[in-house]
Image (spheres, one colour):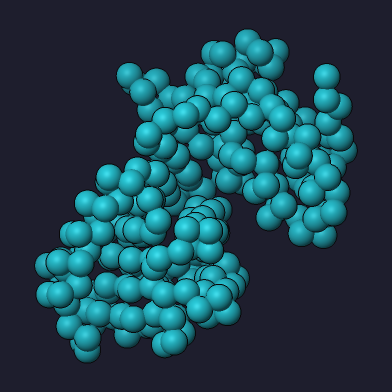
Length: 247
């Protein structure tokens, strides 16, 4: 049995119940609340509250199947983002946590995030995928000001990283938007009429589509499907041809 250094997890801000639920999910994979309560030994109300806090911290996602919510622990490497000062300790801990993970082999993977960490999770995933798979990021319906207000630190880091690695992105914004903070060397903006505007922001990169919905709280849906990504990419390219290079 692998011994987990729970003291490190407490140092990055996780409470005892959060640690118990998070590790339980790593061990059993995707599960409903009743199963999590049974394995962890916690009462259901405590599990509900704990899952909500873990979602806000970007450590748990869920997907609905047959009117039931199945919760899943996020990959342990995300723990590093919580407390960079503990990087060395966390890097030693992550390989141990990875031994608990049961990754289902599916053609399509869907993960739903909610809370303050959505922008951070999405932009990190875009950057990681582009660096690993290559290609470009296609963005539709984005309001750069909202993203910057939600997490200015990660947005500035993202823009600097894609410039550093000479990555490319095409961004479709609404005519009239004049807040365009990305570097000109990496990002090309085009403008669509207001009737094409959408309350969601869609990112197409690699074999993934990510949809961000601003609200209270923020929601982010990451879908990994090569077929679906290719379909979205074709739709984006059609809109790109219709869009204007100047507002």
